[in-house]
Image 1: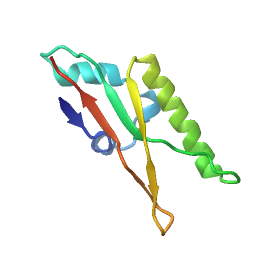
Image 2: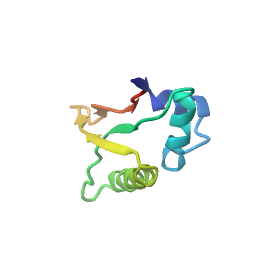
Image 3: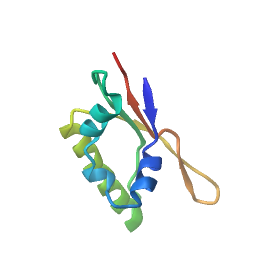
Length: 102
């Protein structure tokens, strides 16, 4: 099994690509070469819409676009939890890209 942190990838791309448009399937196939790709799981913290909060609505909409992109690529998205801290910042409980190999 291969774990790849997408945050690291995004930092390397320096914001040149949005995750909603990224071709995870092609990247996965490239990453596991010369092995065969069996399946891909994408773990992400579920964003909740909050009333009267434009940022949460925008983040929710972006996440829905990402989930639709993953579904089109036949990638299993697993929703985890976001943890809200007393200072009102959030931490993703799980954000991992997993590639089982055969």
